[in-house]
Structure formats: C-alpha cells, structure tokens
Amino acid sequence: MQNLGDWLAGERAEILDRRAAIVDGFPALAAKGWRLLGCGAYFAYIEHPFDMASDQLAQELVKQAGVLVLPGTMFMPKDDATAKRQLRIAFANIDRAGIGQLFERLAAFHP
Image (cartoon, rainbow, N blue to C red; front, side, top):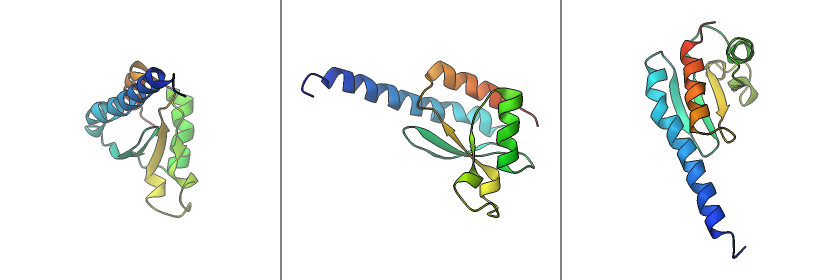
C-alpha cells in the first residue's frame, strides 16, 4: 500500500473529473427538460421530461440511443410516481469524452 500513493491520487482525480463532467454538462440537458437530482462518485440520478414510465424509457434509450440506464422503479416501488420519472446513470466506466457523447445522445433522444 505504501507505493500506491500516485496511483490512488490519479484514480481520485479521474473519479472527480467524471463527476464534474456530469455536473458541468447537465445544463444543456436541463434546457430540454431533464433534471439532475443528485450526483455522486459513480452514479447520477436524473428526472426525465417524457410522458412515459422510466422502465419503458430505459428500454427505448437502449434501443434508440445506445444508452443503458436503470429505471427509478428498480429503486422504489413501481407505483411511486417519482420512480416513474427517474433514471440512474452509471458513469464510473466512461471518461469525460464518453460523458459528452452520453449528453449528446440524451439531448437528441425523442421517444
């Protein structure tokens, strides 16, 4: 563990940069009705602007935009109105450029 300081610092910087990319890029989506509800080190919780349940939207995002997200209904009861409007995006395995592509795909998406 004593020789991992530089590696650990680099990993921390990368995680913080990914989180910053989500927060910095979100205003472009907010203009289209998306809402950032929370953002951590690996996941962002968002509210979508569409008139469809999050489990249906998640399926459409994979098919039409190549974006894999988890619906809010996986984390709350299916009959919860807020769960139907929420998605969870994992960004731990994509870099800043990939996060930029994510935002482009979400901005262009129309169910």
